[in-house]
Image (cartoon, rainbow, N blue to C red; front, top):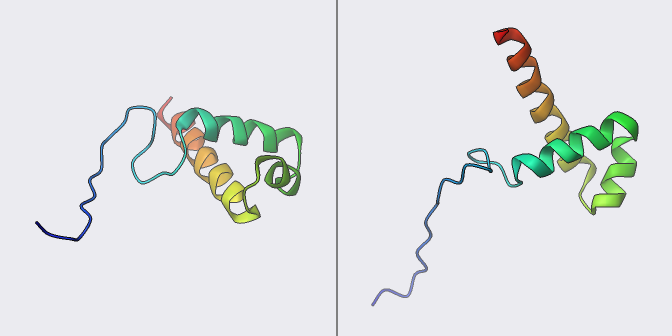
Length: 70
């Protein structure tokens, strides 16, 4: 038997491909940044500033695309 670990990826409907967080959590973070600073949300959620900013930017671009489809 091979000693190397085998990894697989499963597509889940509530997690966007190649994202680390659920869609629901990213939406929650996006909404929090609407009423608080990225720094405050970062402290509250124990994530880096870059992680919070990345989530916010991703959600913003998704919402922008949805508006463009209407």
